[in-house]
Image (cartoon, rainbow, N blue to C red; front, side):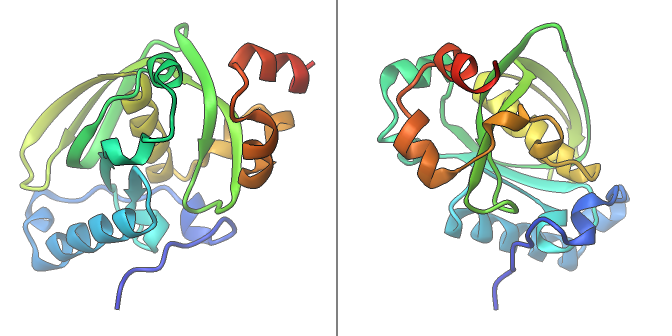
Length: 195
């Protein structure tokens, strides 16, 4: 039986997850959790999934942004979002740093807030120090959409959700986003919704 992605209101989504000890990472339990999370993320489909989203309060997330996910996204939108494929990766016990002065806004959704999206400001570029699935230290320097994914997933590890950062007047169902806002520029949306 696969993992269930919990929805907003589940207490685990608002708790700070505990760090994994290096010895735990190699355990069968954590390695199996990584495999199951990867499958759940692909099945959803999503570009990231944090352990709290499947009921495990540990600092572990998986990320993968496949090119097939944005076949219907225009070249202009891909360029504006600086969106490029990101290969599968695991981040454990991450520490994120970046420049809050350099932010960008785009619509963001979450597998734990199914059916909704909102305009969310995020740092354009970040640095993440973490451990990989083997417990080895790694540093990720990311910008654009990749940086957004990292910030979103790391928020989950500290009890955060995108709704904590969103422009509240822009919260919309995905259906209405497709109907009214999908092809608009961010300045057009901001002008219409945040005035």
